[in-house]
Length: 77
Image (cartoon, rainbow, N blue to C red; front, side, top):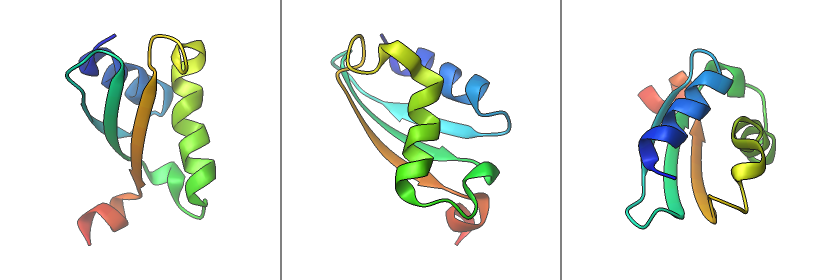
């Protein structure tokens, strides 16, 4: 697994989202995801939305994913 693939999966699963993913070892990654659909949702709900885009890869091909989830307004501020 690589950062570009994870970025593509997140952006495909959350239309309109922008994701920036980093990770050099192939199993541990960090992602900042900006998505309007996060508005009004608590962090846990936002994380679940991102994890849903990755499906069974979480805990398998992706051992760990640290998330920062923001709405566009939060990202701009």
